[in-house]
Length: 191
Image 1 (cartoon, rainbow, N blue to C red):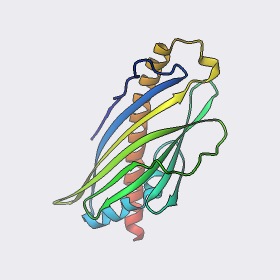
Image 2 (cartoon, rainbow, N blue to C red):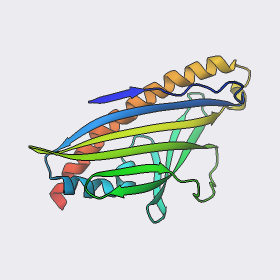
Image 3 (tube, rainbow, N blue to C red):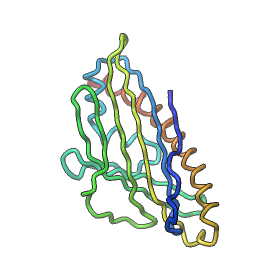
């Protein structure tokens, strides 16, 4: 079960050099394993986030602090990367919260690079045949408009961006669901 919805609209008087986008996705995973095993699997944040489609890199930069870099192309030959610095807050056996970390290292990458805000939560609950994991993720970002597109009206770019974000969130949660289910079974077999 997955639900995806865009939730962010541009602020009044927003800087016309950026398109403001955001979205939320919710998915319920069901694993035929005990809660403690499912929780342990999700504690490996870099391994779990690397299963996101378009994840270019996920690495640890401090204890329970991670940088997720997600790449995309705008369809006109411009490659972009969104950078999300995160802190993990653990409630052992119950939940893992990912919140923005404002103290991430400097960003040093070529191309169009922008910071984004990502909030995620995995809530673990036992069921008769294993574990349910309700996974929620919310993303917000201000994407710089490539110079080639500066002549287009911001409202048109915002509309295209919102539709693209909805499509991308659906694609990401669908790909993430497939990959995490297969990876979890492989991980359990090797544990």
